[in-house]
Image 1 (cartoon, one colour):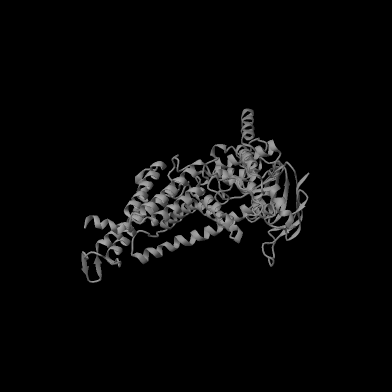
Image 2 (cartoon, chains in turn green, cyan; image 1 turned 120 degrees about the vertical axis):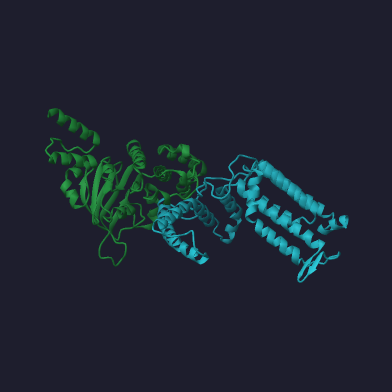
Amino acid sequence: MEAVKFENVKFAYREDDETFAVNGVTLSIEEGTFVAVLGRNGSGKSTLAKMINALLVPTEGKAEVFGLDTASPENTFEIRKSAGMVFQNPDNQTVASIVEDDVAFGPENIGVPREEIGRRIDFALDAVGMQAFRQSTPSRLSGGQKQRIAIAGVLAILPKIMILDESTAMLDPKGRREVMDVIKKLNKERGMTVILITHFMDEALEADRAIVMHRGEVVMDGTPEEIFSRADELETYNLALPRAAYISKRLAEGGMPVKGAFHAEALAEEICASLQKA
Amino acid sequence: MLNDVTFGQYYPVKSFVHNMDPRAKIVFMIAYIVAIFLADNFFALATAVVFLLFVVLLSRVPFGRVLRSVKMILFLIIFTAVLNLFFYSGSSSYQPLVDWWIITITYESIINMIFLALRLFLLVMGTSVLTLTTTPVALTDGIESLLTPLKWIRFPVHELALIMSIALRFIPTLMDETNRIVAAQKARGANFETGGLIKRAKAVVPILVPLLVSAFRRAEDLGDAMDARCYSGAKGRTKYKKLVFTWRDLLGLLLLAALITGIVFLNQLGGKFEILSYFL
């Protein structure tokens, strides 16, 4: 089933704006896929994300989530229940001073009975590996832990889609790894549709599909491998290659017979193989 | 740095008092304040003192910790007491001790001063026992629950409680932010340590402005995050945490009722000035 469907969606932040932040996007995302959305600052990727859970409504065109039109207010609640969103700043998403109270916030909002909320907190904190911090206070946790709590807060609503709007941007490498592991697990084990907005190319490699946005338009769409094999095209959108891909490209240019490798392990093997031949 | 869970003065130990329902404790504290002001002679007031000592003992908070909260307003207590000593205007049945210019000190004014100081002292001690044994979160829950009847007159109880708990949540975040801004301004050569009062007050502006701007940005982010988590006001909302009134609370309130009864009874023994007749 199609989780998200955009038909020629345009969005302008102000009515008199000449340029659209999102300019004619047509896109559909199948349920259960892990999609990375790439692009420079101002490419419209965050605006796109906010239109998926009806925080923003298209100025023109039509956006649907599980067949529900985001433009009609009576759908808003249902859409937000099925499409949860985690934001960039780990400090600005928690409402409560205690982890379990914060995770309870979403279920409380949608009127889940008390006993059921307790079970959902258990489930959500287990899923992000933060059960031990149930009674802690978010301000004492690391950035990665805070984001995992934010993910748990969204999970407790039991959404089918998880949108991460640059949720790893403010984290250190360890925190980024923690968050990526959690969302990959959610995608693989629970079939959760994940939409990851990011400007880290290495994160996109872990997705099933990568979409590149530039000036409000979708300019590239395919598997991460397909996208990253078109290095020159990426460069015109001011995007770099993942680290391993960049190194292998430069090595090949320098005359070393390595095939394009995207992951560090693959690159290492390629280099070893080519050294043995020499 | 103020980076505590429990911003405020919560003292984390387990005790009978800590385990009481915050609602019971709030009612308890208000009733205790009333009792202090009901007490009209030294016997009654002494009972209130003994009662407080008993509660402090029960709460397992070190006595010094409770006293520390009084230290902050010690000046205020002394100031009020001294004013009372000098300008007590009640009638006196004894010769004034000092009668100079506009200052008159009588035996009654001394008694009055001691009484007032003791009352203020007990008042502050009583309230700090509450804040020392109750987390701000529990306190907010308690206030929300106690205010629930006001929903009938459309008072936004849920919203008020949410605002309070979000404010509490953001205190450590904004503290960190303040420290960062201070460091950033210092790095650019700002000087917060020297200069007169006006100069120092002016130096605060470059801290407050960025802090305010960032607070607004955070508020906007938080609003989005709350929207995304389906927040739509109090309507149709359930609550995960439920306050439970237990035998502890009943026992505590019974004890308090006993105190008030005792004080009212002891008040029959006479007014506060009668003690003078024993000595003079």
